[in-house]
Length: 121
Image (cartoon, rainbow, N blue to C red; front, top):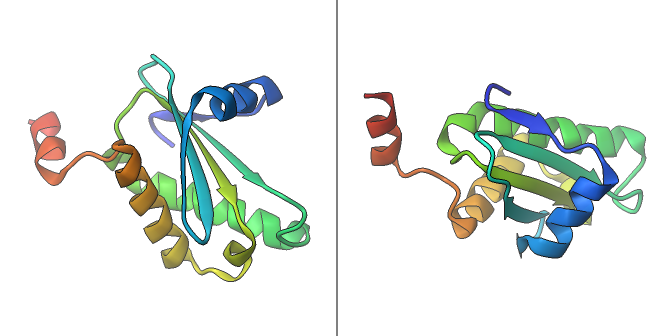
């Protein structure tokens, strides 16, 4: 992840939950909070109710890889927490990616195609 770090501390997650905005679909819940930094911080949470450690770790890998591949499309300066829901245990890579992109668009943290081209110029 070029422009991002991970949220690791309980207090960081708690701050995003309390002050951030959330949108959800069938597979994930996404909380977003502006962090006033020049980078994003990504946090991933998945309950034991979703599955065993293999299933939970697979979800974390899918979210991290989807974010890494689309990182250039995300605007900087946000804390993003992605929470896995039970149907996510059986979701594939592309389904998780579509959910993440849809929720990021709802939050307004995805650049449009024109904005991305302007930034590179």
